[in-house]
Length: 364
Image (cartoon, rainbow, N blue to C red):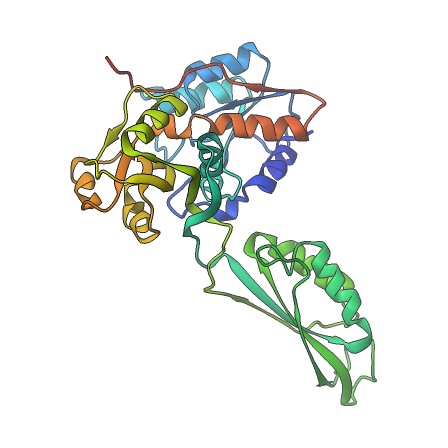
């Protein structure tokens, strides 16, 4: 199996096209055509992680966080980032990161936190915009079912909990081929009218290449008329953060103690206690202060995230309990998610979970 084939598997979980614009995801170091001897899964790629990969004969590191975030103008070994890149290249080790693509995935970072906390009735906190596209095409009536089924087979027409969704309008199309044409129906140089079905169908934007391939292979016409537009509709199963509910509400202190124990953290920084029950919880792994207003709008009793600054806690405004559990702590189970996913997909070589603790923060 090659590096690019492992990446294709990981994109089933978290397509890279859903990464945030500021991010740097994908293959960061290495050759996509390299044969993989072993995979090491980690939260961060540090020098010690590369050393672990060398020791365990893994030539692909799957890292949640990207080691290269902004551009490198020099690789002289002065910084930890440069040293990691140098060592990886020297030992022919590829490094891949899916960071915010996995943040935005329905089964990604935030789903893992919900799972650990036992939250039910989950929904996306901040749905991603412009992630849904619509295809309109025109097909001879007798071929419409073939084309529809071809599009359905590659993921078009999935809306929430429903599959094979499309809208079909009967009409009459016209065309006249020039001298260079080779029409499937009609005669070149003569105008032709054909009973057609207009098929309208939505699809997730990362599927566009597959959708067009299926359309071109199944459609009978020499020249295919189609339109693709990007919709403003929000994707119900894609975006930053999640909202869920406990089966039974708990008081604030009980909630904070449960949170500290479950998320294995030495410290939970929180806003003023409000003497209210905690049942509906919003959460966002990593730096999530930007989502405080979204958590309040969602009607959450508490919002769990990390990296809150001093003034962020004032934004609670006595309406919500803010809980900062630490950046590493909020994402610590992400590497378990990636490891478990790859172990199920790959059985012919080792997929190992890194034993290196990459948390840069310590507490007295």
